[in-house]
Length: 92
Ligand SMILES: [Zn+2]
Ligand SMILES: [Zn+2]
Image 1 (cartoon, rainbow, N blue to C red):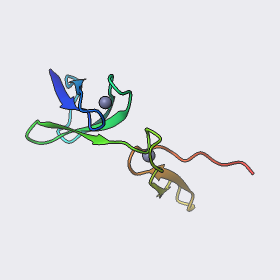
Image 2 (spheres, rainbow, N blue to C red):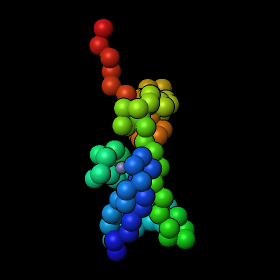
Image 3 (cartoon, rainbow, N blue to C red):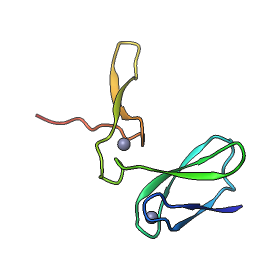
């Protein structure tokens, strides 16, 4: 099924293909063809669709990192809770 959501940045329609969506509250990332910015599209229970801004992925804001444990020995990685970007190790 093809659906449309409104781009939160430029207001243009983003065409999304919901055929591969399996869960009701899955979240999918789409790129607006009009302005090229990424947004997060969530399917709600009522099967309406909503697009949220992903400022950090578009380079408009800092990523909101949080520490996520990756091993039982206390290692963590820094993961952006907005776009799931993993912070790269800075050298030096
Ligand atoms: Zn747009
Ligand atoms: Zn981010």
